[in-house]
Image (cartoon, rainbow, N blue to C red; front, side, top):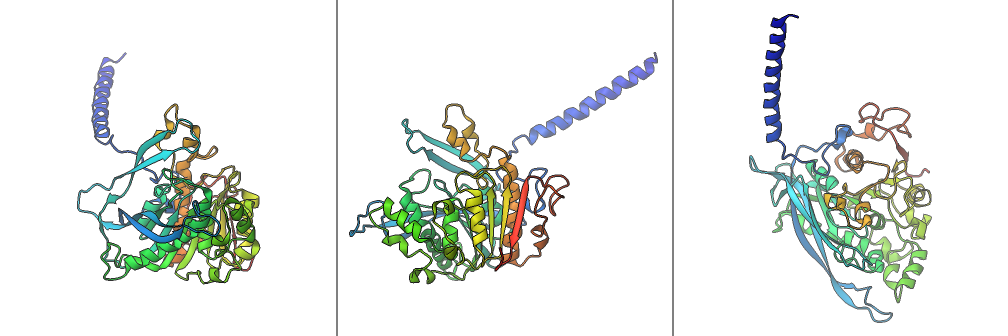
Length: 440
């Protein structure tokens, strides 16, 4: 055996070890990096990555005074109260050199009908900077209003709200009173107040965005170029806010839940006051798994009232809002809208939220805490990236006039060939269908 060769091998091995040790030291120095909801996975589609802007985030409250307290009112004796709505607002921002663009969101969760009355406090990180200065040099940005599920919170879709803000949108997510994790109340309140809250917030942001207002939003948001995003009961709300009047069957159902139905009648398709609510500032809608079709809350007359583009997202096995008789049925009946339906094959209802927070993995906590976020057949982080991609394309077309049509002009079944914007062999398990206004 050649001893000089062995000696050479030993020397090379030592050198390689030292180099690797140096590399390991470098990795150790970067070990505090953490995955944050919305970060692009290696197989994320093209438009999922963040945009050109740094992101700021602020919290404000708005109060809708003298609203009907449907949970306490009796027939013939309506009680009024103030609806306090906490808003989280993400926006393009200017960050000082070297400042950290990492924010911690604090959540609290209670569980209805839990005999132990468990209260779980938890937190998770986001890619934004709290109270950063707004970016004003590029003029006003389109406005996006986000409505969560029941129950939920304004932090339920931070992967998407932050992502859109980085791409030049002002994004406002609502904590709907009596529908959040901490104050969830009777379902009647959510049925009545979802679209009312959304339109009220639109009006409030419009005022705060005007030149000369004392708000940081002054000159920042373009409140006449608006999109609505809603998930589950948020989807129920944004459709009504965008022109889809509720059905008479919902009025009947609402009346059985309360001591009267008059308060919700104004939101039905054939009510003259409802038509007056139509708001031309709203240019597009994204509806994730919108609730209500299987319960008779929608009919063809009401859904024909939507005249703006809609992007629907659903799971083919949705057992909350339904699919064939739920979201897909809404898509088919919204004939006056240029509309899309993206379907996650074999997914259930949770095709919109953040990935499950770490707290949900602890032993002994209710299973529905974890399953409020998780999908049985999909990696939630991948769903998040796919949603970022398609919402970016859709809103880019209708709010920013971007040439993103190629990302929506796709073969119906993603298994047939790789979709535009997806890496080779990664566009599987998806379906996208499209119908122009006037078509089915």
